[in-house]
Image (cartoon, rainbow, N blue to C red; front, side, top):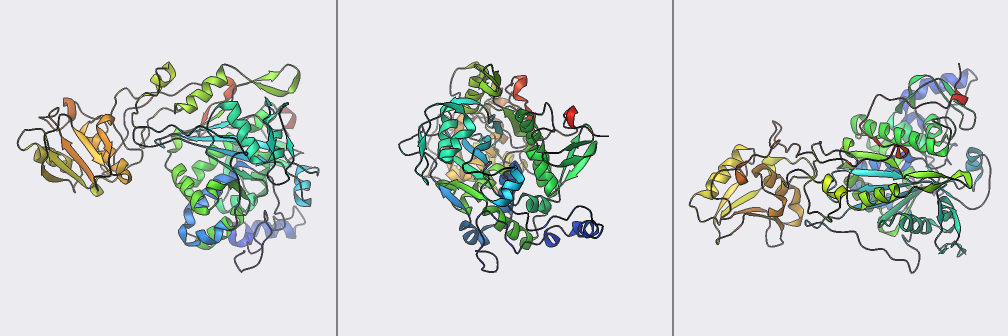
Amino acid sequence: MGLAGEQVAEGHINEDIDLDEVDPSGHARRAAEAAGGGRKPPTRKRKAVKWTAIGISTTLVLILSIGAYVILHLTGNIKHTALLQNGVSQAPEPVDKYGRSPLNILVIGSDTRNNPADCKIGGDCGPGSNADVEMLVHLSADRSNATIMSIPRDTMVTLPHCTDPTTHNSGGGFLSTINSSLQWGPSCTVTAVHDLTGLTIDHFVMVDFVGVETMSNALGGVQVCVSASMYDPYSHLRLNKGDNMVQGASALAFVRSRHSFYDGSDLGREKAQHYFLSAMIREVRANMNLSDFTTLFKVADAATKALTVDDGLSGVTGLEGLAITMNRVPTDRISFVTMPWNLDPNNQSHVMVAHPYADQMFQNIANDVSYSAGSSTAAKPAAPAPSTKASTQAAQAPQNLASPTVAVNKAAVHVQVLNGSGVSGRAGTVKDALVNDGFSLASVGGNSSSAATTKIYYPSTRSDSAATVAYALGLPSSAMVESSAYSEVTLVLGADWTSGTTFGGGSASGTSSGSGTTTSAPPTAAASAPAVSSLSNAATTGGCVPVNPSYIVK
């Protein structure tokens, strides 16, 4: 239902949304353009638009911002279907010693053209759909980093045998481009990506028709830079050399343009999308006004109507949790890559998986090996090595120190110190050191039964608090033990630590800051990617997207 109780067609923007309310700063420009007989201002009637990466990212930000008050209303907007085809199964995600698992979300963009508005945008009409965009979003188990891997839509694979759960049409089992798997529903695309990469796909989010213009207006636009003045007659994107603020129709055109950038191929479009997403993430995190409840509600109401997700994300609460999880990853730990590929010798418009480079990338993702170095405040805690492979070893921290995955206010951490070392007064000594380091709620709990090794016990809801204490004291991650027998963080001093206030006699660099929060842990190494993967980082600024020479204008 719409805001006023009116029925709103699926995939369309709520008719209550007014551009002058969402984007008041643009009113004068739109009015002047209309009065001058120039380009007509964007209107609410431009409401069926193809998928772009801004859709899902902005939707998650908006859902996170408006909170639980409207969750029940928005839940009814979201369409959902099965994650997997009938009879298909996947191995569960591996769990680290703290009970944490990585998360893989497949973002699918459909090129469906099944209504007049989308036909106009796409340039033709017809039944069926292809997965125009496939991005695998990988969140590490500790949520310290994310890798977003694009899979070229024209990658040749053997399609799985699939049946569309809606139309019951069946197909597959032959060699074709991976984007054609969407003809049998998103669960077929999930299966195709799983078969290709060997990775467990935990969720999918698919967007076909979405109010991208309205949502980019709510953001106030995204600044992009291009190497030359350009015009693309296909997407109608016109930009001046240097910095441009793209908003509404121009934001949509930027991410849709297949011909304008780099070499004019679909692979060049993927690189431009990575550039745009990086700029948008920085804009959202730095400047978006999240206090205007009315506007946020209206935009989120429209945005959620555009989503199709798997049954596990079928409510806004699921999307809200996903948004919270994604928001924990620091900007400089978000990496964009493209699956390594080679041109298909039999058809230069298709690509093939580049072995063994693609296999190494899939393995890096499976093993939580990041493509960014761990130097930010939400540093990655050291975890037990899942294998003896060199790539995994290189990605681990030089010290096996515990560390939190998010900045924690030490003054709010309840930690009790028990003495099991056999040395009188040890609990008080360590407690005083914690208080001096900002843990003002630290207390002594008396003597414990004798303990051979020092441990930090914590309930499942206090893992980051426990890691903050462990890191402050220089304790290794192996000292942390999750236990339902404890209601708060409890440090039990053992016979392996009978003197001093830093475990092992060393010091944990970067333990304290003036703000009373934990700072960065020792950096982890970053994996490398072949040049064809166009590795980039969301925090990188200053570059301009190269314009295809054929589309440069004076």
